Length: 243
Ligand SMILES: [Zn+2]
Image (cartoon, rainbow, N blue to C red; front, top):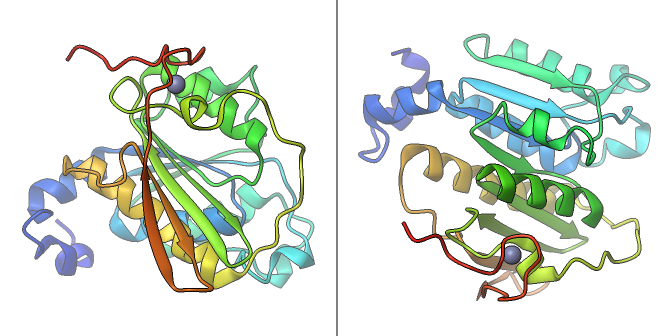
């Protein structure tokens, strides 16, 4: 195994076996914006063998206060093209697959089914709910993160083993709004998402499985809320699998 990963292979939970699990894993990052920036870098740094990136947005100047995977010269370029270019320069041992599309009801199953796990890095409830439904249907675990200024959340969903996002939020979509974002807080939440993904791939317990982590940077405070199955959830049926 490459010397590149020697400092993490030292960790007993990693080892050569764990590194191989990461190399064999495929993760779809949905969103190449603020959360996506940190997520994609961490997954690439850790040696996740295949990273898909889905986004249809174009880099603009107002992205650069937090989306540091994109540079000034990338303004006007598709975010997936810009992000894939950086990651190929950063780690040439892994495969990066850009999907220049927004995840929709029409393409979610087809794209998500190509990956072992999904990392959500979006800023809208609609995309979250589309991914939640597809992942529950496919049995694909996913991690979600959200930020609003100095506050952020993260949750790890393993369909039919944990409640789903619809158990938590219902299926009624809130009105779309533009959330404020600070690079450092966004990066904190994305780092927590990346750690959950890595723990899952390594076969470790994912402490945020079925739990919503709430981070309030005003107080430097972290809280956890245990998710409960909603027995009338129309997406997952509100039931744990029998295995
Ligand atoms: Zn549910």
